[in-house]
Image (cartoon, rainbow, N blue to C red):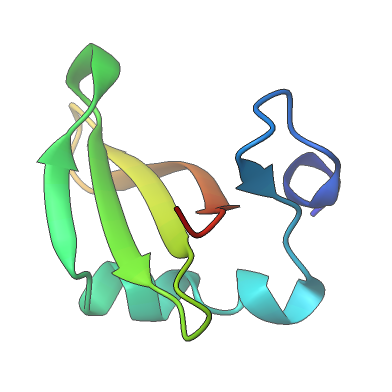
Length: 77
């Protein structure tokens, strides 16, 4: 929790609330977009009601399954 609610180094990112962390499963199951990211990771994006974007970064574990790396909200552009 602490890693995802503090002020991010990137000023475009908005700190998450406890409630927003509960959206991880929703973004995982119903993303608006899935794009390749750095280092073999994937970025799943979901548009929020206020126009901002939730971003979930995942990768595939070599032993099977998924690894969730980070979840953040990006300001409306």
